[in-house]
Image 1 (cartoon, rainbow, N blue to C red):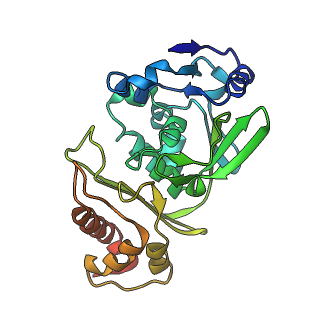
Image 2 (image 1 turned 60 degrees about the vertical axis):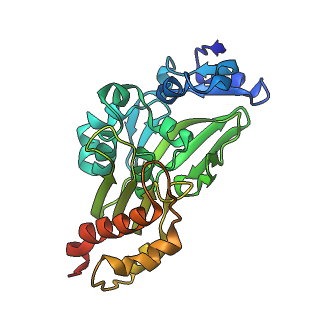
Length: 276
């Protein structure tokens, strides 16, 4: 392997542009550490280590947004009291990401680019309408997170682009919830993950481990927007079938995932929506 250590973001972008897209940026490096013993091909790559770039680390507040830097960690959000007050789902999700060591090193941008369908951080970000800020030597591009993924491990990011920030608009929320179902209460990969918000912008329902990508659930959002009255969790199954496509794998079955998603959604929303 070859490791490049840029001193500035400008240097990092030059490295990304000058090697025909064959470089791999590293933020916290937590996923690389896991894959290293098993994926021998990753040892032949050129990596750009971003960790020392202080300009990407701060978490910033503006009048209308919370801005996470490209190297903002889960722990940075956990310890920010304002984030806990305004964006509690971010804190809830961050506490679900591995052990404290991973929370202190892993980054939100890395969670996005890793593109796991079972990611913990991405559903909360998407439920808050986050926007991904990409930068390259060609300029800056902003992509809404709910339109960032185009397929399994595919995304709207060119090889020469870095995520330099994630912008989360500040809104008034009347409802927020985050739920994760795994094999145990901590340090598990989600069998089903959900993040739900309601604001002046409407409902957002985001599902994890239910499709090739983390995604919003427009059919369920329409039910909620229309004020549909449901009798039990089975009434959600037709909308779930339209929105997601879970699979059978080593962690669970498609049928289990559909029914658990329906039950968790129903139980979480029944009081707010006036269901039985």
